[in-house]
Image (cartoon, rainbow, N blue to C red; front, side):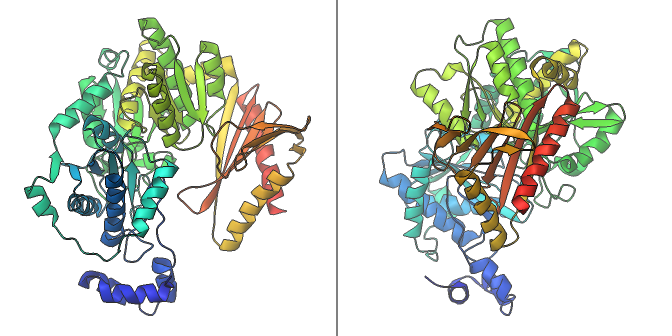
Length: 568
């Protein structure tokens, strides 16, 4: 295996003139060479993602073409349909990378369906199934900053690839020459019919699938609902505009974020989970006085909401919205007589425990899965195989991802925008807000709250220390944290839950993953999990008290106790 300097030298000899010029600029910068060539992008269940630029560790036409060829060879080696749907978002090079992938697949015999314009990620998940494809891909870096891009891969069921298939694709990628040139151009493959453009018919089929998931779609117009919405310069603008327009929503968009742009000039971190992403929308909301403020990320699979309050705005967390949607949908489906007799909802393990309480109250089966919407997609597939796809009501994860219905297998910000507007309109007609309804749920089920703390790795030593701390928790869980007894420790790497007072063990019932969960009595928990896409460890906290003040004080104590142990 070549080291960074040797790889750099090889790229100087084998790449195009523009790339060589970029490489020459770092000729005397060893740190830059190490960053671009030290370790290649790794293909996993979420595909590849990274900074754009030359080198093995960057997103460029060479690494993208090689990945597409590996995916194509995997597709042709099995019994899957030799067809692939490709979509892309607003980022710089997204269209170029999409055409690069399309040409690479077409030249080896895969029929490619390429979206005729930028589209949301969930629309690709829908198109894979709608067009009978064996796989699909989306060129997007989701909510990452402007210098990133990615290639996300999907299986024939429209869900992100399983670990087994991802490993098989990686083996095919490893056997592919990085510098093998394109043998047939994109234009020639398009002219020969090997690449076909996905046009308005598929867009309309997607719209119909989304609209069919509404329960009371007449309510937004009846309530004269007014919404400020920002696509954050991304792919959500056109479809959200279309769907909400059909519901009669009066929509206002910040001019600086309405049009697609890879520059993200007014939202450098285009992640709707972050309050800062709403800055431009808030400025507009102060003028138009809406009922609701929404924002989707660049590929429009995530969505977040905020509501006006005296003196400003209150942003709802992903957990808040997940619980509100659970409660609203179960009520609305019950009122219309369309609730399944055996309804199923799915949430990620790091999402709020309040969801469990709501499910119990309604007699709903709540399935808990590992973090990542692919696991929610797998749960939907399992129901489908049992002939129970119609029993699936809602899947959600705390990171602002939601899906109702089985028409797609990834979170859908377009559909969620419709459901949130319908729900807001229903409560507006009752003269209450989303915050009012959330307060009612808290009084009924408990004042639950969650927090997320990210520790970004700035060195290999820090990374080793954090992972070592997780190993210590596995080997010797603390008897207490913040003066609260630790009831159990779940080690998802080994798949074992240990009941500390009794010393008994049982299986987690979930796939293996590098994650540790400490349950503190029945009042709080903390989950430690390294990120699957970024160099950091995530700490998820959850607690419940008799008031929000009590819950906040509890979480403060638990977080301080964990920090102290990590520092020690």
